[in-house]
Image (cartoon, rainbow, N blue to C red):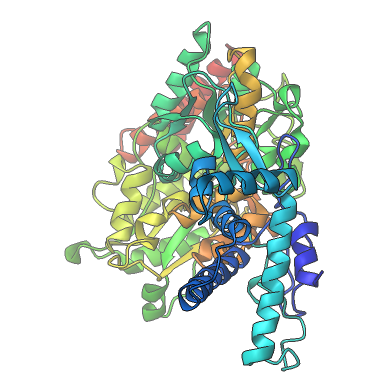
Length: 605
């Protein structure tokens, strides 16, 4: 067995000394009920498919050149099975025997012989098991990988490509492409789920979840049942989740939960603790960005699996900054100076955009701006890297809105408003990114999940010209990238007979394989280190490398949006009072005093 072939099975890919992988803990194998498929990288898969195509074409030439040649049913069925396995397409007994190239009765006998030899496995499609699909066994997949490696070397030996050439000593089949761990596509579950009526999911209506919806048919093949997905805006999603919790039986098998809601949903018993219904180790927790995984916990127990880890960053136009000879802004003062420099309303260009719409949108922006000045929204204990948001189930938690840091944040937002578009007071998550993508704004605070608005649009002036920074810091703060995004959890009122299958779907939807597929289809969130390090992913956007760097530098933090049970009400209060401040109705100190008083009342109740 060659080093590359062994690496596929052992998950320790050998690479050249100049392309060492930064991630070694990624689990790429497909766990399942009694079966583990050997992991195959995307690039290795593509090379195997190329070799299969060559073999099929070559075999056709042999058959047409020699009138007396006889089709080999074993070879033809194995080739068809391997190809469809790599392309994640189901194979039925009838479709496989049709590919054998021999009479039906002969094909059936050869199929039975291959099954008896352990080359083919069957997986039930229905509860009765009368309908099933066929799949290559792990042994057959391994044999094909080995054969493709040998063919690669034989071709190089016969037609050129000396393995002794400089730089080729560490080349293995597929190995030249593997800078990090290359993740395979999602594979069909060993056994289809048995959820009556299909899998029901409640999500947020953002680009990543819309990508999931667009891939619904593919994931229906993976899990074996139909998928029904409902999407709402952030406030309506929160309302529907609470409404669903009052029902005797949950309408949803899985629900998306914004990270700050974890405390509320855990204390109200809306979500099941994951360690109560599954082996959490199957999720490979160490592969998730630390801040995203910690934010999914309450009182030390996990209540969801990160589906999106999307920090809010400062987007800025690299080309515009270069033209003006400006350095990327790393402080709040530098942001204000740059915003003033680029602000030119007479020519339809504005300095900066951010969340200033009344209520939830502005409340989130104020909360994260407080973090820029080193001020948490509550009296959290200071620790290395920021503040302790892991231990929030305490009785002495108090709001710290009316504070020196809160005042600095409020005054900073008031200053930003001078260099913002005229409709800034109605801008929320999407509204601030659209004009940035249209080239009307030089900078914008925005979540990475919204980057597709300009990263996937070649006509956008921001296309290929956007830099990504953590929030620039105020005088008493440090750069911070406040973690946003959603986890997927299981409602506590889900009937017990559906829970096991809901867990399997949860694992499938949050696996590295699934998350890579979301990114390849337009998402810009990578909750796992292994996904961000994947060579196919890292080439798609500079966001992934930037976010990974922030995580390693401990800038990726969730304390700016602490999951306090009353956080939704307090966010809304801040968004109302600060909106009056921006409108000029009240002064900053008065707005903070009112917000503090209202927040304290909420905490008491």
